[in-house]
Each structure stands twice: as structure tokens, then as C-alpha cells.
Image (cartoon, rainbow, N blue to C red; front, top):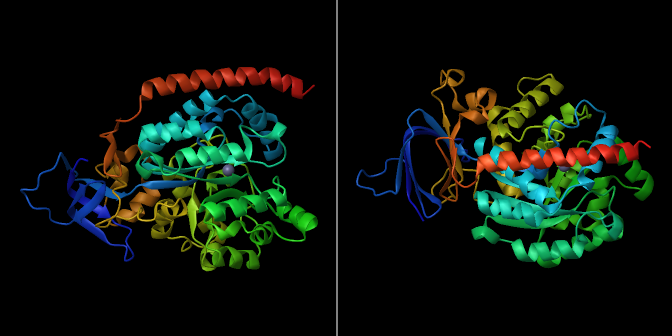
Length: 441
Ligand SMILES: [Zn+2]
């Protein structure tokens, strides 16, 4: 494996002390950071990068997404949530093919690498095709084949048994870059006995779980009426939280729900742009932090958010919380930057990532600060959080391997992906226009 030597870089380490080192060197060997500081002049490296004017920081981990939904970007806009879902998204998804999923995820991978994401936590269908993209792109990924448990005719793909085959094939594949986990869609569509079966399987096989939880107060009321419990209490009692769990959203929580999530060390993934764009009521993420819950950030699907650029998501999360709380001190820059990087890495089981430290996996990005919107450099974290953009990322390194050098993608055929993905997305929409007419009778 190659050795990369970054020279004269400013490093935002995100270590426990929040150390920022100006004009330092970083040496990467065998996939790991082996030195931060002065590197001897006679060091031999396969690649020496003069990174003066650049900032190095841990790459982003997108903690909840549906990458193949790039196909629906810009196709279901300005609609209330039930119409967005019923008239557009579910109909579109019924026409998806495994090849569509491959090209949709490949398009997402190009976008993610270009904006500095090094890992993504994907929850969708035909996940073997997303796994191919993860393997080819060099990204890290935790992949979940979504299951409903409500009958074969309603399942997209092979059901739970098929997803277990997927897990057996892909767990720790691509030199350990791919993690797989079990993915019941949510407690509101999955029957309790099915969730219990998933919980038992996860424990027996040491698998993580990724699902949607408590997206609205209405879901909480329905859960109380049906089970006599909140969704969080219901999932705890079924044993779901006995395994490492990523719970997406958690927008309607009681105080005791927050205590349960903290005690069970459930990771909560928030997707703030979806909430704002679909006008969904949200609770305060800082209340989750006060309860001791680790939260991470995600894009959700590009059909609801439109962008997979974690810079946008990080910034909108910071501003949303400040605005909702009417408190400019809420969610400071260091906190939101950790949500977007190391907390996502932990949620996806990539524990050593998300920090620039000797011995840590080399999952990092370089950001070009020789740009008007990033000067002056009083506070690098403030500039990263409040004015940084995906287009400022010049280099992306995962496990010590360059995926992008000077904004050129090295692992994916971007031109072909842009063409194939768009043609297929157009075809899907055309198929859906006739289905739409059927739906509307
Ligand atoms: Zn989602």
C-alpha cells in the first residue's frame, strides 16, 4: 500500500482536546496515519502533496441516506409529505430495477466523494448493487437492505432471508470497508413479532440495526394506541436496542424516551434539510445531547433533501438549532463538525475513524482555503462550518487511498455515470407517468 506525505497542512484533528495544528505534516502509511508533526526530510513516500493553504480534517460520514434516490432528485418538489410519498416516491420505487439502483448509487458516490464524504450509511433495496458501488468507489459504507415483514407481495427484493444472504456475502467485504446490518423499515410498518425476530437475529449474529424511529407525533400517538407504548419503548421491549442501532430521525421523543436511547447507546441520525424542506415539526437536537445521546448527521434520500453535500447539512443543522432555540450559543461549530464526522463513523461501526491521530485509519480530506470565502483564518472550524463548501474539497483519502486528487475522481467513471444515471432516471419517470394516470384513475 502506498505512502502519502502531506506537507505544510493545517490540521483540524477533532481529537478529545480539539487540537488544531498549523503548518504541520501528516504521514500516511499502510492505510493509517502514522505521523502528525515534523516528518524527516529523507522520508520516502509514493506521493508527496504540498498542502500549503489547505486544511486537513476527518472526512464526513453520512449517517442516514438512501443513495439510489438520486434518481428522484428534483422530481417531487413542493408537495405535502403524504402526496410526496404516495403519488411520487412509492410509485417511482415500484418501477426501480437493480441496475437503476446501481447507477443511482454510483451517481451519489460521485457527489459524495466530490464533497468530502468518506463513508455512508445506506438503507434501501437491491443493496448488493449498492455494495458493488461501495467496493468500486473506495468509500466506506454500512449497508442495510430495508425489509417490511408484511408479506412477500409487499417486499421489494428477497425479504428477510434474502437480506441474510446479502449480509453473508458482503459483511466486511472490500478490505473491511463494507459493513452490513439488519434494516426493518420502522416500528410503524413492521409487525412486533417480525421486529422481535430481527432483534434475536441481530444479537445471535452480532449485527447492527438501522431503522426509522419516531418521525412525527402522529406516529407516537398511533404507537400508544396500538401497543400502549411510545415507538422507543416498543423497540426497547422487543430487544432491538440490545444491538448497535442507528435510529434515524427521532423527532418526537419524551423525556423517558431520551433516557432509554441514552442508556441503550442508540445512535440517532438527523437529516435537518429533509425536515425543513418537507416542513416537518422537529424537537431540539441539543435536548438529545443533554440526555447523553450521540447524534450524527445524514442527508436522507436526495428525493427529500436534494443534496448529499454534508457541508450544507452540517450548516443547516447548526442554524436550525440556533434558530429554533432562539439561542446563538446552541450547537457550536465543534459539536456539529463532530456530528458530521466522527459520530457518524461510530454509528457505522468504523470506530477509529473521524479523528486525525497517529494510528487512526487515514480517512481524511483536504480543503483549499486559498479562497475568498475562507479568509481570514481566525478560526478554522468557524470557516469550515459556516462558509465551507463541497467544491472546496480537493483531495479525499480513505484507508490511505486517494479517491480524489485535485478534484479529479480516481475510482469512478464520472462521465459515464452522469449519462447512464440521467437516462435511466428519465426512463423511470416516463414509466411512472403512465402509472400515475392509473393511480389517479
Ligand atoms: Zn430515511
